[in-house]
Image 1: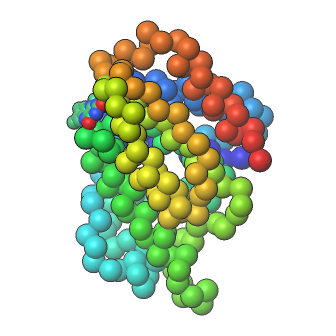
Image 2 (image 1 turned 180 degrees about the horizontal axis):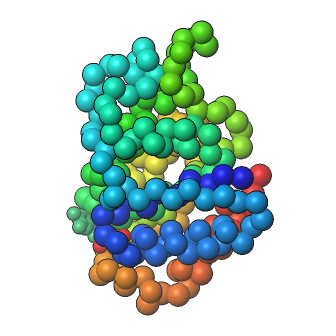
Image 3 (image 1 turned 120 degrees about the vertical axis):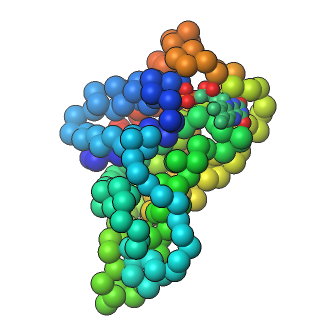
Length: 196
Ligand SMILES: Cc1cc2nc3c(=O)[nH]c(=O)nc-3n(C[C@H](O)[C@H](O)[C@H](O)COP(=O)(O)O)c2cc1C
C-alpha cells in the first residue's frame, strides 16, 4: 500500500507537521506500507494559469516541481494532507499545489485514445484523510478546508476517508502540550492504512 503524505504548512516543525509526523508513525506500524512525503514549503509550484492546456493535453504546460508528483497522486492508495487554517482555508502554497491537480482531473475526462499525461487510477479503494489545526474556537473553522480537501481528493479519484481537526492551538509546537491529540493522530494513521 502506498501512502502519500502532504505537509501543507510553511512552518517547519509546527503543529500540523507534528500531527502528520504522529499520523505517519501510526501508519508505519502496519506492514507493507510505503510512504512518500511531500513538503510543500520546499517546492517551486506556481499557481494555475487557467490557460486551458490541460483540457486537451491532460497535463500542465508549466514546468516546475509539480510534475514530480502527478504520478504519485494518480496512483497512490492513500493520501493524507496536514494543514494549518489560514483565513478559514489552507495556506496559499498548498492551494497552488491543489489547483494544479486540475491537470489530473482533466486527464480522466479525455477520451481513452488521447495521449493524456497521467490518468488517476479508478479504484474504489483510494482514500484521503485531512489533518487540520487552527488558533481559534469557531465550530465552523474547518468547513472550508474540508470542502477544499473533498474536491481535491475527488479530482484525483480519491474518496474522502475522514478528518481530524483541532482548534485553539496556535504557537509553534504548542500541540506537544496535548499528548492525547498526538496519540489520536497515531491511531488515525494506523486505522487509515489498515482499513479497506
Ligand atoms: C497567515 C495566517 C492566517 C491564519 N488564519 C487563521 C484563521 O483564520 N483562523 C485560525 O483559527 N487560525 C489562523 N491562523 C493560525 C494558525 O492556523 C495556527 O497558528 C496553526 O497552529 C498553525 O499551524 P502550523 O504550526 O502547522 O503552521 C493563521 C495563521 C497565519 C500565519
